[in-house]
Length: 68
Image: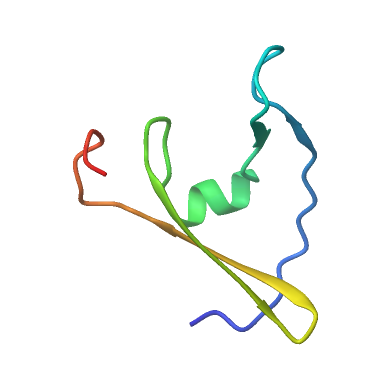
């Protein structure tokens, strides 16, 4: 478990001009650390703790890109 805080800032943008979804860029340091590439899937766990929003993102490596 990584306990250090990483200082990365990203900007949220619209996924497409007609979409209500939003998109964020994954910082290159995270891409390299987890060997991520286009088409990889991420699992998102979201919870509130002590007034903070905790978001845990796990790469789903080793699974087929078409699997859910």
